[in-house]
Image (cartoon, rainbow, N blue to C red; front, side):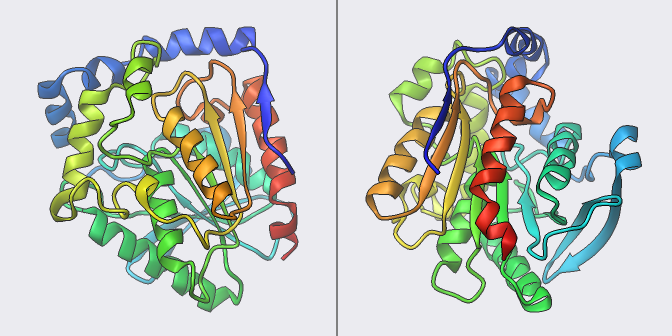
Length: 308
């Protein structure tokens, strides 16, 4: 299956983007002092409580995979694929699994008929890339050994970058993911692409200063250029089939586009769903026409992996 595009933004996407701009994240991220304060306030927060609608539709339980606690999410009353999905949440490596992650995983578990294991990896500044990649890789290995089948691995934003770094580490092992599904992955923790900086004024939720602060905390002793921190600079050869869902109004879009081209040149089965003028991780706004189309496309991309 090939790349897919939306030619123009839907009216509902435009309205939702305007609403996103009114939220607090952009105002915090453009200010270094406020970004530092926001990171400090986020330390130790647990996973967000699921919305009532999700709690009614889903079976939610707790499990442990190797070193990590996980929240297990599955739809009620729907036969499931034998292949599970490991979900690595975003949040700039400093924010915990939030309500929007519930919206997205709720939709994915029902659309794909999969059991999702959302991993609770240690966030910066306590956690670092060195620990995060090792822990998530160990969790995937533990799940593979227990289930007897390798999982699909998905992630959004920072979680997408972490998922890609983990897949690169596992690529030549029995625990290599069956497929990668990345929603607006953060691939260069230093945000050095000039196109990204030019997009900043149009992106309704992300800003370069706050992300760079979080990226340095996550990089810690490895440094920003290390492939576990910025997998854009890793060798993509040997990666599993990979699907990317991105929007062109996202400062992370240029790097995702460039990664797809590089991976394809290296022989990876990679395809992208690109939504015109869509904001960061737009699929979490599950009601948007673009989000629905992206999930249909992703389900088709994952069809072979879901069959086992």
